[in-house]
Image 1: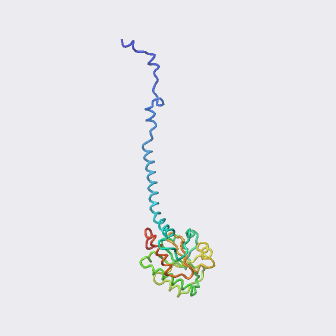
Image 2: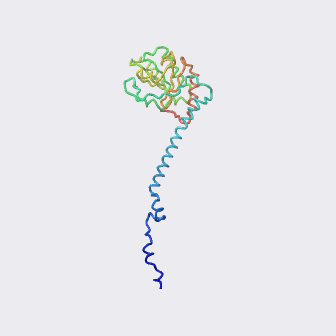
Image 3: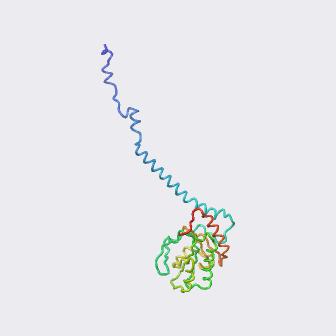
Length: 239
């Protein structure tokens, strides 16, 4: 009785389900691999975290320069602000008085009160060296963030008494460098020479301030105090 309701032709004509014709099978087949998805998510999350860390590190530096250059909370600078700042040349040929090579990167990590004076060092040169030392001491508790640098553009010997004088207390860092290379990095005011100025180099190795000729230490100190205050969030004592 049941056989008369069964149609063999209908059974033979019934289509066989395939992954292509079965929407459920297609849906399951097209799902992404969970392991691959998790790995991609971790990679994306790591990149985002890295970018956030870089932004957090750069923000205080950007803010400090914006404060000093744009807002200038205490009026205009006494010295000449250098915009854009000029990085210390990667190929600057530095050496000690003994002739030992020094890498330009060694200048980074500290504010540098920088003079360019010949080894003969006349009375005007000695006056600038005294002013450099006096200026650092005037900074009080902030002075440990600042070093004194004397760049000599020749190979002549220093007078022993002069070398002894600049070595007293916190000694001046004395390095030699070719004049042409120094002139390609640091620039005097129009009609002046490098020896006429004091140059300020920031802890990232960038020249960013030039004093007037025959600078007033008190007024230069005002510029430095603003810079150090603006950078208080990321600058550290010692190098």
